[in-house]
Length: 320
Image (cartoon, rainbow, N blue to C red):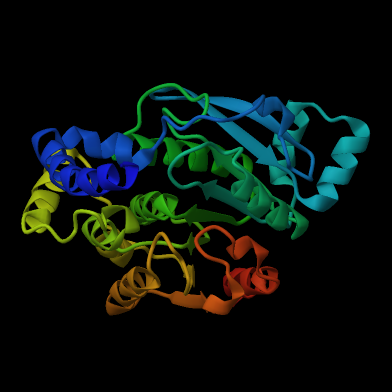
């Protein structure tokens, strides 16, 4: 009986969901951001983070933005021994010869999510500062997310970091949905002649229409004759754009794209289209793929043993 119910439900949902999104395109935003998925502990604990750091808040245009600052390994040991205050830790960003990563996470959950913390730990072990935030509406940050709002929050964190970084290089890192945000931020900064030192894109996509078309989540209704019409019109009316393949052409800093061949959420073909768009505008792009047999999927590039070397080679571009 349950089997027949499931069989009957799938085609019904295949009709109802596209129709619902067509009638109420604003539903696209919460479905895409997934900010309502909340499962976190006290952010002051920096749960799972190996290095010393601080939980802090910025006053963005939508209210409070929850942030973490995780110290490089060598600075962490001293800070932990001396129990340095948040104010002193903040000033360590200007300590010479320490590169800084502004990390922009993907959809759902918070800056505390396990695979994100794993990435922070890899970067901290490389002696890098990590600054990360929860966009408006994510984690315990105030407000409600929108594409423009999340971009504004990310630029706010970048500017905060830049004001404290001294002469240290700042790289922007975006994962998954965060890659679209990172590209938009780097584009805006490039157009103001103040680009980051570099842009790192992990498991990125080229544009929102292609992303949803190839997504495993749309497989149940991709076959319907009205899918393309409903999809394009619904997205155009939803307030979302994420035109990364257009935005990337205006970025003036070096770009590193990393993608696993077996990514089950975002096909590597979309990352290749993004790379090709950048190359068509003569951008400085490095593309790294990870073989499917390694099983890195969408969230585990941080487990690749060669990741530190890949990053060091990319960072070296600043000295060429």
